[in-house]
Length: 305
Ligand SMILES: *[C@@H]1O[C@H](CO)[C@@H](O)[C@H](O)[C@H]1NC(C)=O
Ligand SMILES: *[C@@H]1O[C@H](CO)[C@@H](O)[C@H](O)[C@H]1NC(C)=O
Ligand SMILES: *[C@@H]1O[C@H](CO)[C@@H](O)[C@H](O)[C@H]1NC(C)=O
Ligand SMILES: *[C@@H]1O[C@H](CO)[C@@H](O)[C@H](O)[C@H]1NC(C)=O
Ligand SMILES: *[C@@H]1O[C@H](CO)[C@@H](O)[C@H](O)[C@H]1NC(C)=O
Ligand SMILES: *[C@@H]1O[C@H](CO)[C@@H](O)[C@H](O)[C@H]1NC(C)=O
Image (cartoon, rainbow, N blue to C red; front, side, top):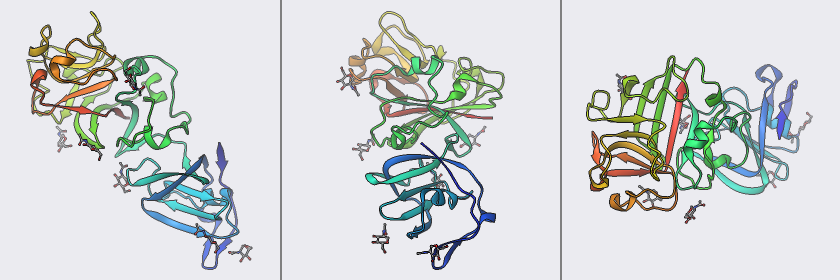
């Protein structure tokens, strides 16, 4: 559901609180019912019989990232933070709704184009490659609290996929990050100019990484988004040394993208639910069977234009 903010002359919302049209820009907001936002940095709190949803949207001006409103409690609260900021707490509450702008999800200048959730039994590679799933055009209001955030709040049952994946133009940089409990444990930045959705994931295009030697590491033999998907394997986004014997396989990163892989037992990685994101905790590649890895809950891809 959408709400258009209204252009109003000066309105008394509360004894000492006036809102005037010259400070208001008309914007379209998305509305999700049944949730209340709290915490974050509060800008305004208005409890007045005069408050309406449209008025609440109108006082959420440029410095405001999100708002929460209740007809029953006649209250509007605006926040500096976007609804996906980690500081925002979502509570289910039938009396309240959440207002936010329909715009790209951004973290520090990077636009989120893909967010894969571990263990949901949906192929992240197929979600990546199949055109058409656009979770940001408009932002879908289901699982809002889980699937746009990079901390693992729970409740996210789908991979977030941006419409940008189907119109990969003017991309300057690409970043792949993996998260454990909301902390970025590793990242790799790539030069994105003249790449496509399938061609940016190359060792030669790396411009920065938490793995300090990865750019020049000549023991990397397989650096591939399509990965290794033969003989009962579905390993995607792989950065591998050699393969053939489970106990000797080395990696910086891989996503196991189906329920089984004949090495999981040897690697002591719990099987069954997928995808599984395995990231080296060392400075360089690890022999996976020695278990110096992080099992990440989220893998995200961002772009800069
Ligand atoms: C509601 O708006 C009217 C008209 O602008 C104003 O006279 C009244 O004081 C407002 N009520 C409250 C509680 O702010
Ligand atoms: C708003 O004010 C009314 C009356 O003063 C009060 O009953 C209600 O609890 C307030 N709501 C909130 C959310 O503070
Ligand atoms: C949340 O908002 C704060 C303050 O605006 C900002 O510094 C921080 O980077 C944001 N965090 C996320 C995850 O967006
Ligand atoms: C994924 O599949 C495994 C094995 O069938 C099952 O145990 C698990 O509950 C499933 N997880 C989800 C989120 O469906
Ligand atoms: C993530 O957080 C949960 C809940 O706070 C905790 O039980 C779990 O051990 C944490 N996982 C890691 C890898 O830190
Ligand atoms: C790589 O990133 C780190 C931390 O984000 C930064 O300090 C460093 O300057 C970057 N290096 C390059 C070559 O961009």
